Length: 131
Image (cartoon, rainbow, N blue to C red; front, side):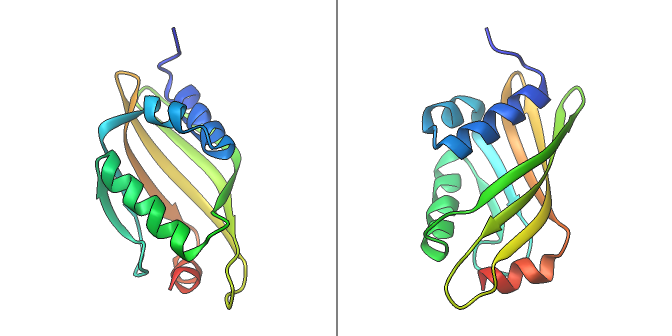
């Protein structure tokens, strides 16, 4: 049996993302999961459901073929939420490298991630990188 603690679930998600472990990611996400990506860039928006999340990942990979890596600095949590503080890094031709200090607020219900809301320290730099 796995822990339903939001911090543990968040740690498992970010480990699975770093390892490319699609099975664990799918296990952790509720089928109706939502992802809110701030900004005015081509990948910003609200994504609803795992199919929509897959479209977000494909759109992101089209812009940044090497992908984005998030270094987890700290995971904070409570009864239903975890806040993942990290630094997301990426490179793409024609743009300065992205080094984005970010907070990902994760909401968990009955052991599944039901929402992820992203907050960026310097949104204008993030928008410039993705545009």
